[in-house]
Length: 63
Image (cartoon, rainbow, N blue to C red; front, top):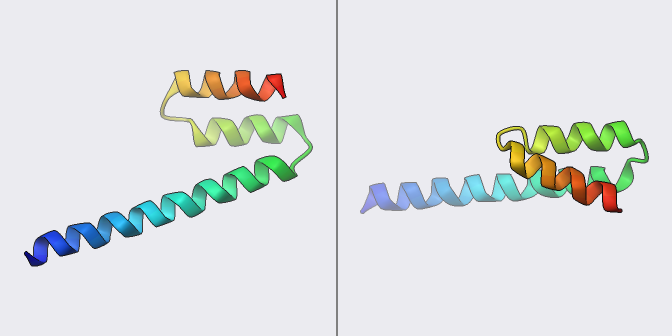
C-alpha cells in the first residue's frame, strides 16, 4: 500500500513538473519574435518524435 502511494505521489510530481515546463515553453513561444528562436524551441520540445516536430512546424508556419 505504501508503495502505491509513493508511486502515485511520484507520478503527480512528474505531471506537475511537465505541466509547468510546457507552460514555460508556450509562454516563451508567444513572447519571442525571432523565427529562429521559435524553431529552436519547437525542436527542443519535440526532439523525441520527428513527426510531431513536423506537424508543429507546419502549424507554426500557418500562423
